[in-house]
Image 1 (cartoon, rainbow over the protein chains, first blue to last red):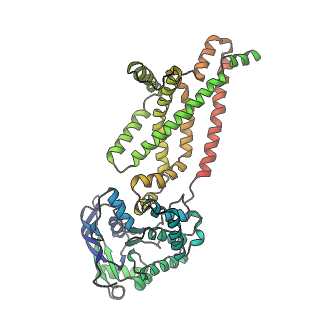
Image 2 (cartoon, protein in one colour; image 1 turned 180 degrees about the horizontal axis):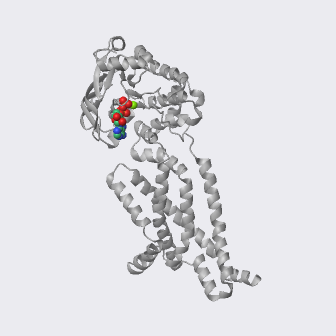
Length: 249
Length: 224
Ligand SMILES: Nc1ncnc2c1ncn2[C@@H]1O[C@H](COP(=O)(O)OP(=O)(O)O)[C@@H](O)[C@H]1O
Ligand SMILES: [Mg+2]
């Protein structure tokens, strides 16, 4: 990633409340094309809300969010188009439970991008091969392990050929032995130059793949730095405290 | 005994039950159509649609079916002159189907909504996240799973509809309860036999529906 690469996702003075709770406070954040951003911070600090605001699964109270230079539309077809360009991988996978793995991956391209069935299936099989689950194509999600489901979810998002991929704690619902297979797929994606916003506490991933780490606490961006600097020499007391807790485990 | 069986044949009791089944089939189809639209309205992001759907359900669900039937036949047909068929008998039949459909649609809607509650919110979010607009997400992702989770309450609604199809008598449709009334009036000696015959007739129709929905709801359950 070049420092001069153009901004792909830009948040300016973003604020969000849930009732009285101020979950996003004056967030200013720019993600450049090809950048891999890791978002880290204690539970409840607003990391999920930040991701969800970018594709408007959550609305914001004030500020602006742009993706590829265009403000995120409020509703309708324009919003659906934006979402198609922003891949999202959820903590709980959220694969369509009544559809096969192959249908999960081809659904978006066929219904949103209007791709022909044959082309969509060919592309889907290539993606499933890339994340190592091509032999599961005919199965239902419930027949797969958590790690396999999450890799299918990554393939499903990639099938839309998104401009940016967001991952919200993609490995925290997984059994420990399945974490690595998902992280490997993500590292490979980062190496290919995908723009990524990744909420995770996996330091190994952050050190290997991230260009920048953003530390959030209480709805604010408290500190940001390259991974080495952040993990070895955090400057804020909140970050030091947080790191001391996750490093013990 | 054979005299009683002759009586049943003479009044064509089998056909009367057949009319109830037809009312149930067409009324059920109409209720399923309207109920699905109502359910989509009630889960839609538009406040006005949600409000309209909720109003329909609460209004219709709390109105007696007989009141709806009588209104359709006396007010809509007799006074406003709306006809649903040129043929006299079919006209009454169609009004009865309309009444049954409109009424049970409210229950179908609530059954489907209970099915929607069995679908995790993550399913709809994932659908929106890949760029599916609301209607496509509802049609392709949420409703198919909701129907599969709503088989049991939908079955109960169908059973209620079959029993309620006797209210079509109020719309002058010659169906089983009307035939029963005539039989008891003109052949009071057989009042017990007549009652038992019609009661058993309905039990025989209802039990298989109950069994089928229990079986279907297990078979169609979405594994998560
Ligand atoms: N839909 C919601 N309604 C009300 N409060 C919410 C909702 N979603 C999240 N919150 C609250 O907002 C805060 C931030 O949540 P979240 O963004 O999920 O944090 P994180 O992902 O960092 O753990 C938390 O206190 C959470 O309880
Ligand atoms: Mg979270």
